[in-house]
Every structure is written in structure tokens, then in C-alpha cells.
Image 1 (tube, rainbow, N blue to C red):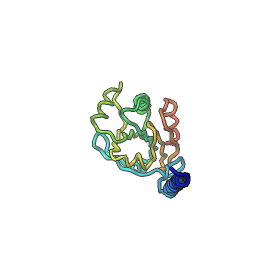
Image 2: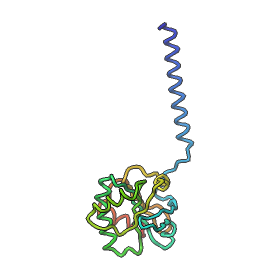
Image 3: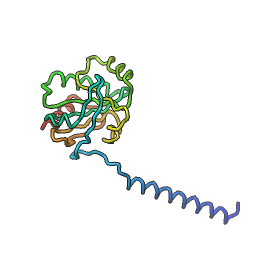
Image 4: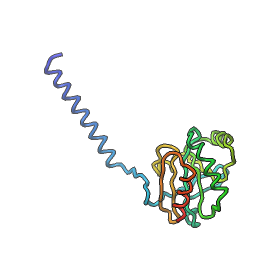
Length: 178
């Protein structure tokens, strides 16, 4: 290949890469994706539970309850490890001031039932099904588990990615009910 042709090819490649980087940056900076952060108003949603009941965030907070949203998946080992702790606290505590909602991310009921049957205890808090991932996307959930505390006023007061300890769960409940 001639020297002049090689230079034209190099310049063309550099210009193409620069244009693609510019387009990518433009789309990322002008997109409407907004992460729900601590201090933001919680995104309201309505989901169906495993028992077939409808659950709406605004109804729970409207009843004066703080809400702990725990996003999880059946394949997630940390999710399996934190669920019994959440259940122990939920069943041993006076939970009239808060609600724990375990939001399963886009899995079918058979997978969820197999997961639950593998736990040592029956879960007493509602398991909501986010089959379309709309709620997961609205809250910009990345790694699982991710837990969000919403206070009685509907404001996100705490968010943590990864597994909760027993003490973390108690802290989430305290923050949600203040």
C-alpha cells in the first residue's frame, strides 16, 4: 500500500473513532435517565405479589408506613443469605410502622417458589413481581441485592447495593420510620 493511501486510511479511522465517541457522549449526556438518589421522591409503582394482590408504594406510605424495597433474584447468593434475617426481624418486630417488600426482578413464579422452598423459614413479607423490569429500571437498580428505604413522606432516605447484615436491616427500618 502506498504511503499516501496509508495516511488517508489512518486519518479516516481517527476521524471515524472521534465521531463515534462524540455521538456516544452526546447521547449519554442528553438522555433522560435519572438515577433515584437519597433525598429524591420515590417513584410510585404498582406490582402484583405472589399471592395475587396488588401493592402500590403510595398506598403504603399514605398509610403512614416507611417502606423497605429489596430488589433481588433467585440466582443471587447474597439475596438468599439476607432473606432469613429480613424475615426474622419482620416477624419478631412490631412492623405496623413499616413494610418490607421484596421485589423480584423479572423471574417466573416457578423459579421464585423453588428459591423460597430452599429457605429455612416461610417469608412473611410480600414478594412483588417486577416481570417487565419497569420498577427496577425506574430505580436504576444495578447489582442485586439492592435495598432502598422510603420514609412515610415518600422520600428515598437510604440506598445500599449488595447484601445487608442484621444491623443494616435494623438501620434501614429506623431510617424509613423516622
